[in-house]
Length: 380
Image 1 (cartoon, rainbow, N blue to C red):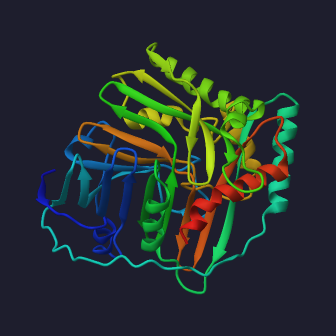
Image 2: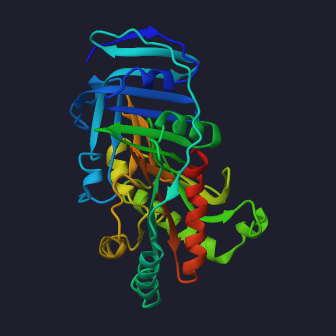
Image 3: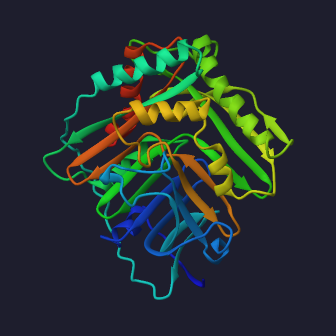
């Protein structure tokens, strides 16, 4: 597919997004490597190995479970999509790519909106039921870790302003990957700190990101206490060891970094960077191998997934699923779509989860999810 490239310099990539109201579109800001990709108007569904090289940038959005039943998630995820129009910022260059005729890109002033909103769901009883099931299974030795999650509905007297929310997510979340995907009147947004897999030539990179502590407030932790906390280390090491084991099934050339702290606006996480050398599998194939790591599913994976499918009261949809871009011959990055929300008019469904191990306490973990939802609520 022949794309035409034109120089284009915008003050804010959301200006490009606003030129395509009503179209399927995707927004991606990689704060770690200063890459921006905004795509608009579906051009084609792309097959992984057959024709991805025809398209300059290909978006991939997964779903957490293989199937989706909740109609608010219908038709979202589980495909690779090439778009007709792209705005790209990378390597100090800023340009417009279009397949076929371009459009005259109008400039926009990005307005910030302060939303009034109310929590309109109450899930504490569902949470306690789920936690009882998880802890029973862990204490009986069937699994070592399960990641429980919450879906919390917020409503506003007016429509939630997606552009304002995305703009604030970019501002508030250095070190993160900010994303938005709009289709059929619904927009999935978030700011994820977690790389599932990055593919650069023969280098494959993944994060073990698990273990969480608050930075602020009366229950704030010091970095030293967090780094040496037994419960968080156990939770983290389950994730690290599973990623390493999965990589070693493909290649013997695997390197495990030191475990350190990733510092976000509200939270600390334990992080271990794991790299491997491989030329046999694509980014998408690696994503399918690794998803879900025990940072979002559990260990052992199949038993944890069965438990979540049975006891979690909501549909995860694209929450915690692989999400990202490939470029040219397949180099690219998939993140785990956490710290996220689905926006539908004046309703917003925010998602957050936490890893449950034998030492976990239901009320403390519930409080942790409230902290994690702060990423979305701060953007409102």
